[in-house]
Image (tube, rainbow, N blue to C red; front, side, top):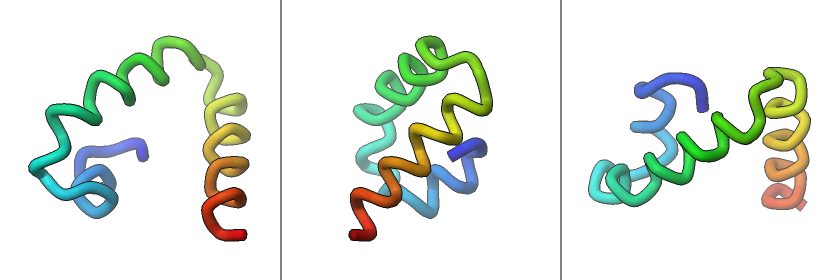
Length: 49
């Protein structure tokens, strides 16, 4: 999720306060866009199995 509008679609607003620190940490840990996209694609595939 790259934008606030995508965050709004993905998570109810009541969870944003808890989710934001996790997403920020993820963004700081994985600074390469390619690596982030790979990880998120893997997560998507696990969920969609």
